[in-house]
Image (cartoon, rainbow, N blue to C red; front, side):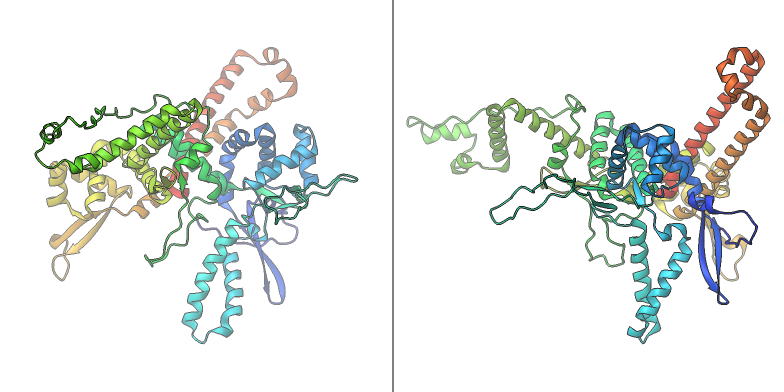
Amino acid sequence: MPTHPTTIENGEANPCGLIQQHLVVHFTHIEGGSPVTYYECNWAQAYELLHAGRIIRVTEERFGSDGALIASNMLQLARKARDAESTAAIEADAPITSVETLKEVMMNMLKERFLVEVKQHHMQSKTDVENNVRAELVQKLRKNHTSELKLMKEVNSLVKAKLKEMEIGDVSEKSGLKRKAASAGGRAKKRKKVSIYDEEEEELDWEIDENLVLRINHEKFRVIFRNQELVSLAEQRLGKATAQVYGEFLKRIEPKIFRCRDNVGEEEETDDDDKPQKTIKLSCLELSRNFNRDINLEGSIALPPKEVKAKARKRSYEDSDDDMTIRNGSSKPNGKSRHGSNESDGESEEEDEWAEEDGDMDPDAAEKRKRMTLIKQHLMLLAEDSYRFLTNEGNRGMGEWSVNYKELGKTMRNLELEKIVEERFESTGTRLLRIIKDKGKLDEKQKIANIALLKQNQIRAVLSGLHECGHIELQEVPKALPPQATRCYFLWFFDEQRANSLLLSDVYKAMSRNIQRAMVEKEKRKHLIEKSERSDVKANYEEYMTKNEKRELEIWRSREERLLAQLMRLDRIVMILRDY
């Protein structure tokens, strides 16, 4: 979505409010010896206003009503300049118990990256930031390179790494915090000795820096929204209990993930396949230690019944070799059978040992082991599903698991595309789309009709409709030169990137029409809505409002509710296609 920078002459509107809301970005450039400032609309930040309700709800779940109040004020003002301004703005709405409580909640939100510090590059467009970084690197590295090609290759790689570092920001544990001043006359706290070689050190308390400029970190909330969507998809596939286990797993690895499309835990994608890729792993043992006790997994999964095997009778002195041969069921020497002739016998002996240990251990330890076994079974279900919600990475700690967000995002985009195609072209359209996606480029006359088991005249109109909507593409391959329409192969194929891009554009248009419709409906009842919002009318609603006015207000509120619900559904599709 292109935007055009512009300048503001003297006497025109002041853009400070829009800049504070991050709705307008700016960049100052020297032209002709004098500075010139260019302004550009930040449409992505304007779109984030749709997520205000979801952000406040998530913040309230994590940090309580105090956190929700802070997030609400942050979204209204887009940022908080200093702690004194934050306190004044929040206490004007609903006073929090004390300033210390406010600082503590904001510090916790900052630690978990729900809030981030505002930097200079946040106020500038991405193109200007990239050009500025590139110019600085070229000036710095030019003296080390004689070849322009090598210089630009190194600069491009460094620019990509620098931009990624700037977008993620400081991820250290003490970022944005300062040491709390010691109380007058108070004794300094000492850190406990770990070994005899350690010296006692003063334990420092930390608090949020009052001079920080903070804002809502929308990237972190996108990660949370994606996890919620994955849990909902897992519940549809595998049930509620498995989805709850999946939600706990995603919550444990959430602090290590800072962005949806570019995680700091993963290295940059390169063409070198030999370079190992870092993945975020979590073992079943680590998950079970911090697992939510309110989730009841008892009876949530059916375990296979244990085979009851009779224990082998010890040989006595009266038994002969022939008797042992008959009991073993074989004429071979029984040397191997005495020590375990195969792996299954060894496994059954180990199971018997585990069963004996379970019987000997205390009830709490047995309950923990049983719960850990159930968690592992649910994790295995998630890994064995065709959507591959989890990937098995090893056997440490009863199994290590990771999440392939890239493939899951692709799966969610394909599911949304197929849903929309089914709404438009019914099951035939979805069937043809899956065939073309699976087989690649196909000819209508010979391949598609035969694979779909349909007649050619039945699929021609559907293929044309899919092509018109941008879901599939058509390639013309001439049989001979010069090319003629009658002597060409027409091959249908699926371009995922183009299909998602066109679908995203259609969803944007639908959202725009939805908002315009809501504004038109509201404008029709402008005077009635203004009357209902007056303080004297609210105090005596039944007296001042007539029956017709009440009925009209109910109609408006019902329509507004339906329009907003549809807007949220469209926003969900946008996040799946664009962000996940």
